[in-house]
Length: 572
Image 1 (cartoon, rainbow, N blue to C red):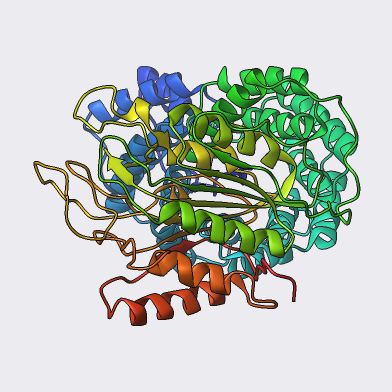
Image 2 (tube, rainbow, N blue to C red):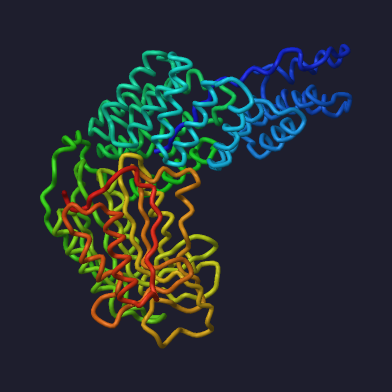
């Protein structure tokens, strides 16, 4: 789920940076500049020293630096950045740039973090700590090759760096090298058996390999260690390790079908105060997954079969209107699953003739290449919500998840919503409650062992007309804005072993419904999605070219990808 910020010790600040104080100042100085001082006392002591207004230059920079350390212990990254910036202004140092870069990392601002780590490396001799932290930022950007190169440098500088072995293993796992990842994680555990973080990451590897019992065992030991001796490293976000331990074990329990223990762990995840972007993303996923397993009838707990086991490609019953058929039996590890919805028979906004046809065409194409498909057309809110929740629940045991939606889509306050056929879109506090939140779907799929492909054939314009658009063959509706660019890809969510989000049109543009039986986008998609040996991004490039040609440049499909390697929906 979440990549852990590895927090090694701060670079040493030059001794003697603070002058001798009088008796009162002697009491304040050590409290401010001692790494083990509790956060509140450290901040208070440094603040009082600053208030004396007797120190300048390097001495004052040192005090600002240590107050930034105190803020970092408290997880207040905005104040870390402010104080570290002041320290850099007064006296640039490797330590200050490293600390500020780590705070930007925790906020999810990876490019700024990398720039700070670059500056830190320019100021002094090569540092394994800074290489390690820069590797974390590259990993946050999903540039795993550069991350591995930096972890290599960190390990070269310190061959006993357990965290660098751990994070190099995480990067290898992201690239699909599970055996290489396991070797690095095992080395991290050998170097320091007291660390919970490598065990948490080994939990994810066991889950990816389908060995859920080992995953649960490692997760349990990681939680025990994190509770017994909470990480005190000042650059580890508060509570992040325990939150990560609970969410990983919860996902393992859920994949095994042990919903009772999964619920306990999801609740434990939500009960902890989160400070960093990754922990907040974990909690967003826990909130969705807890709702899913609370509503579900728990299956009999079982061991997952080998990832090599493939299910029979049997078509799922189509779901239409407000009475969907029961959800399919729990999926097995390695399943490729798809949720397909096409809404056109709108009661209160402009009806669309083609989304049901589009959904059927895409669903058939996916079934033909071995996907287990849940399909629904013209769904009201109750049916759409049930089908979506059933799919998210079963996706806990899927290896690849595809979500396709055709119909109206809107954006409210930066969040995207899919529109059921019974919704009357009128301004008001309850408008969003009548729709399906796309961010909830994304949070429910957030899991580093799964690849997610989300495809939306809906408008992305901002037609603020006073009346329903009665003319025109596009998927725009009144008084609403179309789908926004996704923000989750850069704010801490892992979004799987790679996630690709594709829209039928570019931001701010309309998606045509089409003159024939299908929209231009879905017609092209259904033709190319089943092409054997065609990598998914190459497939979308072909779709884009066909749509641009068919619509005479009126519609240009758009996508955003964090895929970690080549993904083939149809086997090579």
